[in-house]
Length: 441
Image (cartoon, helix red, strand yellow):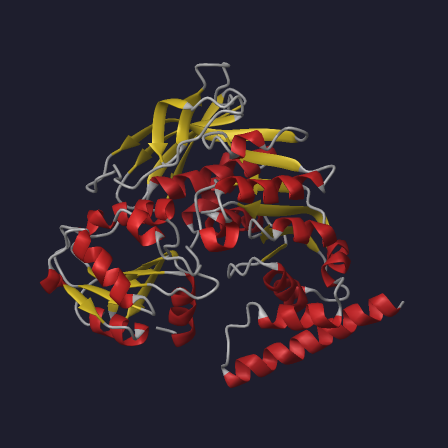
């Protein structure tokens, strides 16, 4: 009884705190309310499961969590399901608690919960809230000062999986680490059989890719390698190879959209995805695989893809100072390099890099990211944020002429300067993105 009273007290205080935050315009409110809620009721999330009638879906991975979970949630909503979802991407325990605290009502129930989870916090989330599905997008090298090497991150996810006896996995077959997570669980696989480009940008990347060994210790080889470690891999020593996909697909990548043809139980279904880049095609394929696995049809899925709006810095389109702007989060070598391929080199460009805790203190990833893709930029490239000077140095060594590089540490001023004339591409790190959102640019 005391626990239930704590739960309802936390709900009441959470609503009051959120109203105060919004009135004072002090924060976006994506984590503070959750932190307060967990202080009042540490088991808050354990009580929230009863407010979800059908299934709890979690999404994790280094890149693409927000877009994939956003697509999954939107597909379900367009199929007339009531969904609770941490839409703004706050994916640690406080962020998840935040969205439940502001959404749960005593007599209101949701059909699905779609929860994006930080890789390291997934196991903590599962201590309180069991999941029916886990979608894993990829594992790339990311924030070495926080997560360590890839095998450490993989262990975080494996430990979480082991806590959930009935968990069903939806795994990226093209990622050789993700593909090993099925050891004790029901799993289905998605992946690309063929990738074709019909776009003006250079689809090859100079960014270094990881070298992966098979479980037997022998280096993996590739018959097809799409980007980073993703592709069709095999071991010449023990015979291990990429899983056969339950949802195999072909994709044709255009400048700002992709066409994906997905096989489902012997039939082919074509989808148009209005998001740029192969990395977003992977995100969409993961969401489509989940939808097919849960009985949704092509018409329902395409309807959702048609009007899906990119969220919070993930190919997000805005009008700033009367001119169009595209905001693309960058945070690690592979993700940044894939985004850099798609940058409109005729646009003004702002790169805003911070090294706060949520960004990772180690900014060595800038040197492993393919900023050489910007060598032919026609206009100014403005560097901003706490590490504006470091970013300017990186651009110099990427071959961008010194006269085209401008340093403006103040993010708001940098964006205002860039958006006075024509289209702008804004590439922020995570806390720089939060700053942009708070400034309501």
